[in-house]
Length: 327
Image (tube, rainbow, N blue to C red; front, side):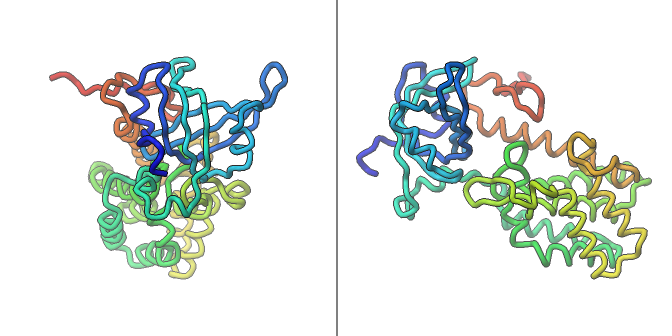
């Protein structure tokens, strides 16, 4: 691998001009078979690293067509390509590509460039998470939350919060939940109508179904259960099991289950029901706030120094102004 030029990150590529050639080592995130208007088959390939992602097309007459056809999501490739743009978005023209094996990657510094992780220290986040569990005063509610994380804690610590939308990286689910707990702790004194213990318990367990919904080490994809049931239903099942084990009374268990079932906010966003308790409304809104700000934070982290606006983000339904306010 030493015969190749130093690979550039996706963020580096944003500084290049059209027509420049480059070399990058990237994760295969998605390969989709498509048909052009002339009837010829081609592949739409999404590649990325911890700094961002790019898309390129691989046509049937390309030597790399068979390579990408056989590659699974999570594979690693070295590409050489020419910088081109389509509708103002980076869409390189592939010149050559080669797969990189796990043996070649072992011990290589390239791996640390590929896998995006939460910017905050994961051990510190987990310690803080435990403190939020301990802050729940109601014994059976606290025991319910603790029982759930005694079962799924190791998976929860490393899981992403999404495939692509928000906190979509290693430890992202833990980061998202801790950020929500911080926000809830700050906001709860403003809303005495909301039961603080129930709301905090709901915050901590609302997304637990995602440890089952998602799978994959380097690249996240939905599991069979994730596709057939979804994290809302899977989380409901986990919470119900933990609540029964901890002898949580029927009213509190139903209310905690309702938070999980309604936290997506809208039926078209994946909620099983619309939030109908003060605590469920509170958790759904805090969840939406941190999801949106997580999108903002990630776009700012991945921005190039010369970038003024991000690409349009599906979750924000807009481009994001990346420059700081002038004061």
